[in-house]
Amino acid sequence: MKILKQTAGKFLTVAIIAAAAGSVALLAGCKHMDSNEHSSMHAQKYTCSMHPEVVADSAGKCPKCGMDLVEKK
Image (cartoon, rainbow, N blue to C red; front, side, top):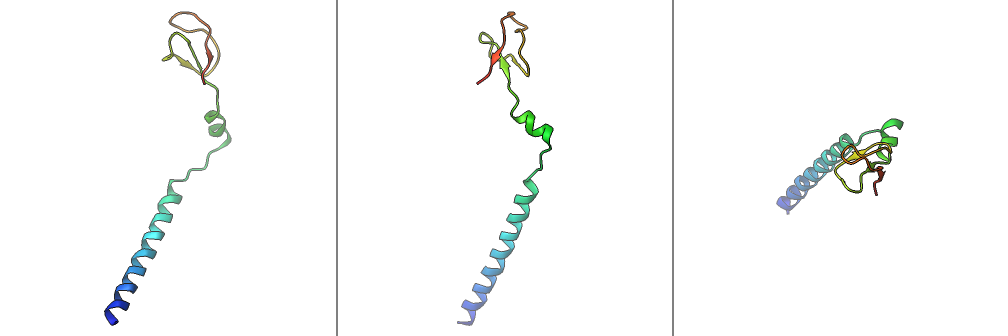
């Protein structure tokens, strides 16, 4: 019975340490975004319908063919 209590105590200690380490890792991975970063995440992108590799932050003309860039979906 004494061995069972010792094992349970060690298991509980390891579980608490693992939970604390996980919480620290989770909080360290969180990053606060300022308003500029947040707005850039939702910024609309534009692309050429003939050249999908062409991507721009604003509407304009495709540098390869001159077609109008369309909103990327």
